[in-house]
Image (cartoon, helix red, strand yellow):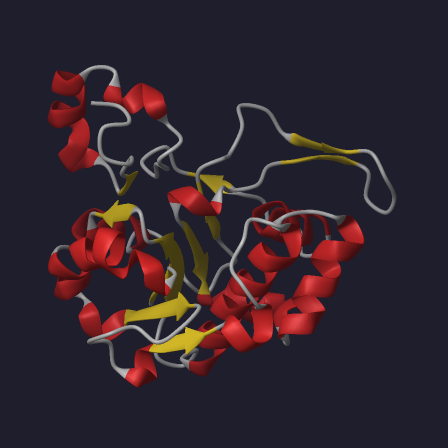
Length: 229
């Protein structure tokens, strides 16, 4: 199952390109988190967040509110899928590569898969659970096994529960997820360097190398037009 987070104003500039490329190959398994209704998308394939989350922003509350809806969707379709992946609307996904990778793993075991956001662990100083842990940046794509979704239920059952947890720790969504998974569920990040976000500017430094290695990767975050080229 693929959940794509977007907002309606990016339908033409971002989402339309995904709908014409990777999404159309797996359309029946793709669902959307969006602020308002999306044109040409089945009503059964998206959840709107405007009433619950308000205007979209990058504040801790807004990010966590949007991400909490991922888990509402996951649980609606829990019996249908073995793997549950989150992507943003600025990502291209090599579906075949993702499928091949996930097929080597057992969905009945707890997996939290993605790319670490930083080159070092996140250092938590406060109690409870002071220490270091890795977390995956949601901007590069993150996948959870069915077992992990089951274990996360008590922390993601409602929107308010997840948002209040974020606000209590004052962590954005991806760090808060990493904190829960590492410190409460004992599930560490399975790192995969073939997941990429738009923040990895070095990927675009050598165009020939990018072209030569593109087919091996699982996700790519595409930059705004003209930013890197």
